[in-house]
Amino acid sequence: MDIERHLLNEIRSSGPISLDDFMEAVLSKYYNSYYRAKNPLGEKKDFITSPEVSQMFGEMIALWVYNQWIISGKGEVNLAELGPGRGVLMRDIISVLDKTDMKNHYKISFVEVNEELIKEQKKILSGKQITWIKNPADIMDMKNIFIANEFFDALPIKQYHKVKSSWKELVINSNEFNDSLLFDKKVVTDDLNKYLNDEYPNAKDGANVEESIRTIEIIKLIAENVKKYNSSALIIDYGYDIDPKKRKSTQFYSTLQALRDHKYVPVLDKVGTADITAHVDFNAIKKAVKQRFAYSSEVISQREFLLSLGIELRLNELKKKNPELESILESQVNRLVSKDQMGELFKVIMITSNKQKFFS
Ligand code: SAH
Image (cartoon, rainbow, N blue to C red):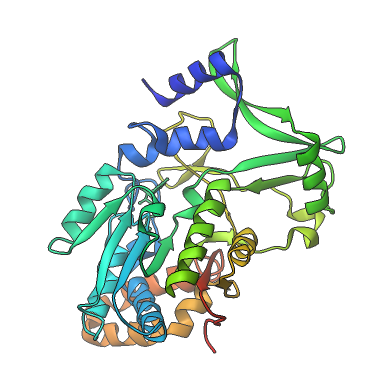
């Protein structure tokens, strides 16, 4: 049964569904959901990610991983990647780590729901010992270094809209006339209405806010693990870091988007055949980390992260080795760091057991 049919049946039997349940159905709940049915990654697929742009991305992350391993006192560690895509990021990370004394001290776990991608990961990392799990909760009894690039943007969100001074939740309903899906709004409880009013004092009519319950659940698990085992986590994604209380009236817009074949499409168009994502709320991540007594760093741009780790030195090295690739290598780095490409939109945060700054 296609995803739209599943959803229409569900709406008919139990009423409108919230945006997060809708996203879960479209992205991961059914065997034919978007992230389970096919490989979405690549120039010829729906979207492209930093590790797919250049090996230099993973090589820089390897430097961060190695540094965390040293300051956490070395020892055995599990490299836990959430949403590893085709596995290229991990391949590039360990190509560096295997040249160091960390070589025989790590295992690898992949948190992945996509069988097609698991096949690719097995190919790209053949010979490596990897454990595949569906739920991050399964690796919380060991010391980890967590890595997540473009994972949290794929997790479901809820949206609330302010209409005539009170908050409504965005839901998905069915259009009885033509048997299709449509957006609708639902009244929220008095408690939730009060919470949203207190949390977002500058929201006016027309304001939109988002929250990802699943993101916060996973962040809390990670933060507990970080505190208990001296683990650390690196999260890279597109998103924003704004204190809700200080949010200006112009900062209440929807970040929900659907992407098919590198183009934006309407969210309810042929559901299950396009990627649906939302920007990551880094401020909410920081708050959740604090509640679990771990530390989060400042949020910096991907540009600052990669330049500080020395991506330009690595670029020069690669250019010397492969003069014929000079312009390709330069355009790769440009794509990763320049302000009008992935450099500013993508943000980086780390979660550590003790207070730590990125580059101090
Ligand atoms: N990190 C990779 C891929 C990003 S795409 C890269 O940078 O190239 C998102 C990844 O998260 C995919 O591997 C997808 O299959 C996985 N994913 C999406 N939703 C998931 C979920 N709910 N649980 C586990 N993995 C998920």
